[in-house]
View 1 (cartoon, rainbow, N blue to C red):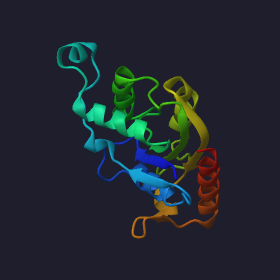
View 2: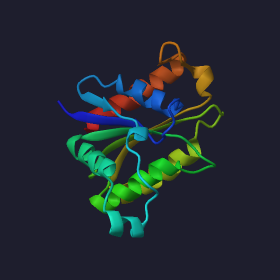
View 3: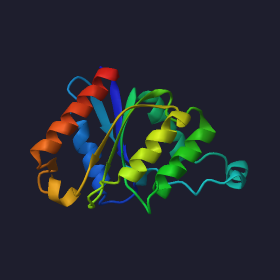
View 4: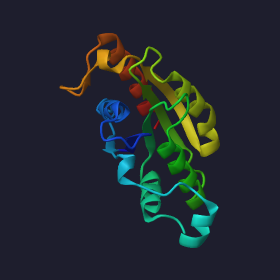
Length: 178
């Protein structure tokens, strides 16, 4: 059985992307998954000066260890002003200084959601294009538009049958590539 690390590129305690990532993990049928939250791995904004003076943050070393211990990743990305969130980029920056490649040449399923009609597709396309440079093998992408219309906060599940079918298929494809 392989292990998948599941998280959102957010440090918000009410992240809709964290909810989507966690839910997507439940579609894994033959592998285990670990859900983490980046807010539990704080680090200063990357700086060579900080790195030289203080070394690598213990939180980033711990996160890098988790990246090594897992066989793949499900990551859901929030979109901040048509780009990646600062916490996600900072995490990538720090881990790349500890050990490259950041995503260890492992399979990655990229997700995104927002309350808008595009479902954070801009950040999804951007990260899909750069992830191979960060050592991630993009297996697939999935964008959920209009989160509050398609996801039930009460049940923690998608409420739209068509979206359930899409997510089931892409997680199944990812799992076959592990």
